[in-house]
Image 1 (tube, rainbow, N blue to C red):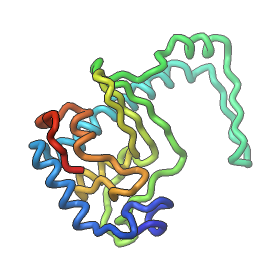
Image 2 (spheres, rainbow, N blue to C red):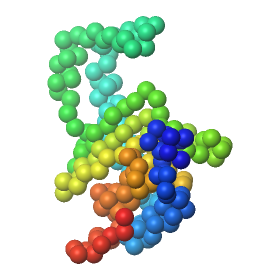
Image 3 (tube, one colour):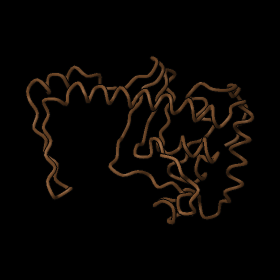
Image 4 (spheres, rainbow, N blue to C red):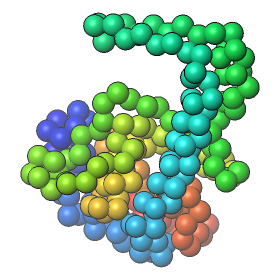
Length: 190
């Protein structure tokens, strides 16, 4: 799958999709967490952060004028003193429920969904144009692509074990404070 569905691939050359999905399902079962619970919790955090980001944009955008030219590489913005002052007042970090700090990178395009090529996806993909980093109050931090919540919910897939964008199910569950904690000395499944 590497190089066909994504630049880095969703699955390593020596990996089997069924094996990766089965191992990740076993990891979640040990925690007592379902794929849907994990995807719902991640979507909640991302939706909340994106709503804050949008609200901040709305508060400062009125005095900002943006001109797009025929050359997509060129983007110019002119802003007023009032807009600059309001931007200084905006919080630097997006915070959700006083438990999570969320950093979002927004892209103009979206991550390719690996099953589009075979017509398996008929829904709008949520968060497919972002990458995120979430840090919880304990200091645990994890990064991933926005598309991962859809992959987890619909396909029970966290990407391949060698993939650059893989989100480990146990780490995500622990970050979002879901399921049974992994005991000291216990070796969690990958």
